[in-house]
Length: 189
Image (tube, rainbow, N blue to C red; front, side, top):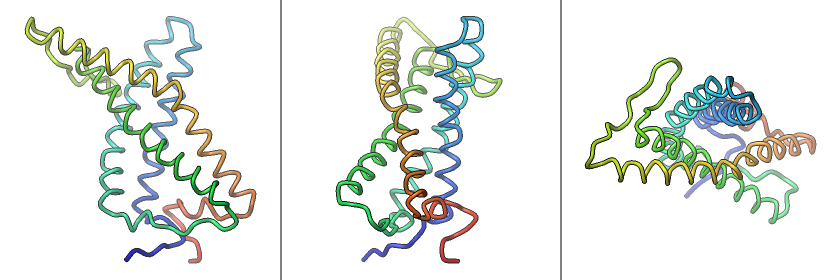
């Protein structure tokens, strides 16, 4: 039997914010790189890739925690919302989880199998060593990963402002939305 509480667990709250910060930075740096002069792009893309790898490092335990601690995510529905609104909220959360899993995974695969490695704040984790035997296969994996990364990124980047906008909307309607995900203060305490 499951029970619903008025807030996420403290651990779930920390995971939310620890993943959100580099993920937002990752999206922001790639958007900035797309609008920047050619000479500024490498620095921004290095930061984008570093933040993407950091996001992946945080998302993996976050997803594991969510799977194995379902009660930590079982919270009461906000009052006054229609069934359609709750359905759309669930759909957008599922899409956001997909985005934060697929983007780091495809970016890591692209860098590793492309052979250039994974930049991480001033260092690079080596990629696969290209040989005559693996060159075609690793190139195909890198290319497929790039296509997934680009396609999901093109549309998925809108999920973050949608999520933040929904939170602000709830707050304006008097819902204590931010205290539900605040690791430092719990609603009703």
